Image 1 (cartoon, rainbow, N blue to C red):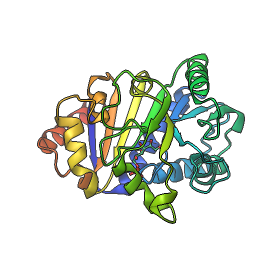
Image 2 (cartoon, protein in one colour):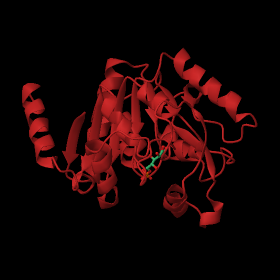
Image 3 (cartoon, rainbow, N blue to C red):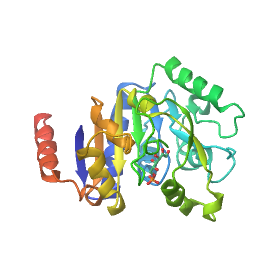
Length: 260
Ligand code: F6R
């Protein structure tokens, strides 16, 4: 795992955007896995800026979102459909037909989830998956005890996740109790992954996910077995890592080796 520690949220977001841009320039029809939540907002803002000011085009890019609340319509202001349109898709030149987000209103979730997996496969698999990490160590909505081989399915949300996400709703009772999410196995199938985390409140879970054992209790720990993960943290999120100095040393060496 490559671990990059940046000064603050803005620098973390710019570094992630730099990598995404590079990958799109290499492969204009990149298949991009996307996350919602607070963490990737700066990344989306920077990518939108790159589109407007530097001509970065998303015309051929295909996207698959990790998850959607079950029971929310695309028009619901807290749905992930709404979030993606508001914060990213409406600001770039992406073809909406090339974007995929789980259907929160499907009456046949099992069937829908199989089709979502098939659609990813039809597009040749996800080239680059963007991830945040939940307070309980989830990626997507793969809550503690999710199978590390799981595929897209409907999941019950953990109490901590409902509490964490209640900040976006009028009150905690409005937070949906279920979501459709890519599985840990689906995420791990991506060819490359960027995990981002920012802020002190993520530091303990980041240390467990990166330096602790691989366990279904912290599904982000499964990223340790993936051959190509870039973890980008700000100083606060990195502050509980035991080997922080070592990661910084390695990152510097890698930069030098690559002539930067
Ligand atoms: C969102 C998602 C979640 C979030 C995680 C962190 O699509 O899949 O796993 O990445 O809950 O959320 P924030 O970034 O709001 O702390």
